Structure formats: structure tokens, C-alpha cells
Length: 325
Image 1 (cartoon, rainbow, N blue to C red):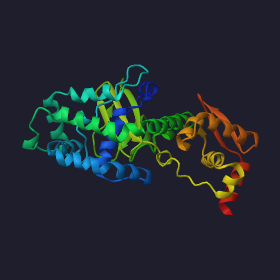
Image 2 (cartoon, rainbow, N blue to C red):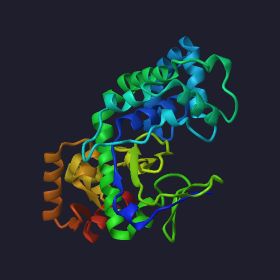
Image 3 (cartoon, helix red, strand yellow):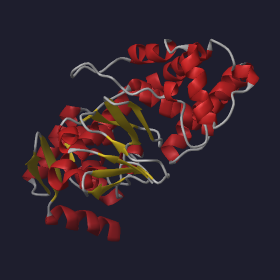
């Protein structure tokens, strides 16, 4: 299995990072594979897969390049660079993708031989591979991600709030155990990142970043020895936002929007999470929470910088009664 030795100073300096490029790359991987992890992703895929396949059919060199870059067990490093935010500032997609475009051609070709696990096909022995990769990612971002980005960003932010809350309650084991397939905290400063038989890495004095994306994709990347990142899919509940059913009688009693908030509070959630999950505005969610608090159907508690809301026994009984009716 692949695991990293993560020291206390590395964990102390770790952070969650929002990366528009990682979101576009995860979307590219989903388009290339043509499979969806849940109904919401299937709807998006059905809307954009035909255009993606037409584009790849019209450009067989880029199609071959992407298949090679995704490999079988390893992404070509130049396709998945490690995010490098400056201080607290998030980089724009244009800033991030420029790093791919500026990759030296010989570096891209070397990375492809690793992802392929063998020699480079003759058709890919050319100098425009980084530019072709950047062009395709720009197309995916512009046509298949950007129209949804405000919604996706809210979901990503909500996932970060949830992970941070779990970290404060249960430590790193609680925060990372279900972060991505095969990942779990082993103890003794060891973080298993996948189930492959890779040699361990020591992250002493390195910076570790966690990068959530909404497509169900995951990968590791690094700029050794200074920066490492784990890209992981947002939790399933968030990925399928808005699909939680609201009993009709409960909707009639409380109003559909307010009832939806109560149903979602089966586990503690912040206002940010509820905004992302419901699609309602911050003011509307706040008003619903106040009414539910006044009715003693929910309670709240502070966890670090976040305030989490959760159902009281009365709220649990009310929701359960509607489901049992």
C-alpha cells in the first residue's frame, strides 16, 4: 500500500485548498471515463459528454494524449500539478492552467512515459503536448464547469466546513478516514493514501494540502520535497445535494423549504453547508433555522469557528413520524 509519514509540524501547517484547475481536471477525467457516480453527475455527464466526444474525435492527437496522460494507475504529473496558492489567496483557473501550458515539452513527454508505463507512441513525440492539454482543460472549464461553478464552489466550501468540524471533534483519523477510496489514518504519524504497493514517503517539513472536488475523482500530487496535495471527492451527501426527500405532510406543516432544512439536519451541519445543499439564500436559511430553534426542533453548538445545527429529540420524532406515516 502507499502511505506517507506525516509529522506533527506538517499536520499543523496543512490546509484545505479550493482549486478551479483540480475541479476542471476531475471533470475531464469523468468525461474521459464516461461513467457517473450518482444521478446528479449522470445528468451533467449526459449534457456534456456528446460535445466532449465530438471534440476528441475531431482532434485524435489530443484524444491520444489524454488517454496516455490518465494512464492506468498514475496520472502524468504535468496534468495534475500541485496547487500553489499564495498565502491565503486562491489562484484563478487562468493562473493555474498557465503552469500546464508553460511545462517544458521534454518534461511532458517524460511524464507520459511514466503514466503509460512504457515508450511514448510516435504520434506523441512532439513539442505541443502541454499547449494541447491546457487548451482542452480550458474548453472543459469554460463549457462544462464554469456555468456550474458558483454552485460547485458552495458544495466544496460546505465540505471543507464539515471536514474541519470533524477534525476538531475527532482529530485527523476522523477527518481523513473516508476522504478518498483506500485512504485512512494508520496511527504513528502514518497516512495511508491508497492501496497500491508504492514505497512510503516522508513529508518532513513539507506542506500538505487537501483539495476537494465535486466529481467523484481522487489523486495525489506533489512538488517534492516542499508541497504535497491529496485531491478527494466531496462527500456523497453533498455530491447529491438536493436529493434528500421531504415527506409531503411535513412540507405542508412547516413549508417545503423549512421542512427540507429540518430533514437535512440528521447530522450536524453549518449554515454554509445548508446553503449549498438546499440552494436557498443565506437569509432564507437563517430565517428557517431561527423558526426551528424557537420551536425547539433543533439546537446549535459552536465547533471552532463554525456553528453547527442539529435536530433535538422533538425534531427527530417529528421527522420519524412523517416517514412512518
